[in-house]
Image (tube, rainbow, N blue to C red; front, side):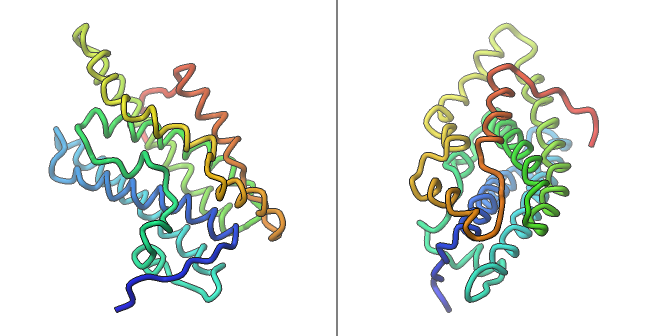
Length: 225
């Protein structure tokens, strides 16, 4: 059995893998709640959310594989890369933690992804634009659902806001790599994208929307999918 594959350094492939890996790993972490959520409603909701993320990851991995030379399929990219070739942000791979941690992580990631997908709908890559048009609808629901749960967890007794703030502590060191693209390899990837005839969305657009949400207190409670 093949233990690993060599991943292309083509900027378009690397960009797609960064998004795909966020969806893939977060889906795996979220699915750990299946059968273990506090109530049946959340059990079903989190399982469905994980399935949405897996669908997004599959679409992105398939597209990345089609651009790869030689071409690779989604399973090869999902399972046969070396550990260091996964490009997800640290936040999504942190252990499941308690329910409050999961809710806050989902709120942060769904908000970031919603703004990123919104920007990518205008990508010159028609396949990516199509993926984004579908994914933004799912991300919008994910954000609304997580925001509703954040409000529920923070309400009630006077000590609830402080209790809900505790799970945010691990985010301090991991949150910046969502928006700042701190690694030199990612900065190089973004700079080189236009050279390959593709106009993706620089993460700064998503970062701007993400900062507005978490600094000014946007998301709203869920109002249905």
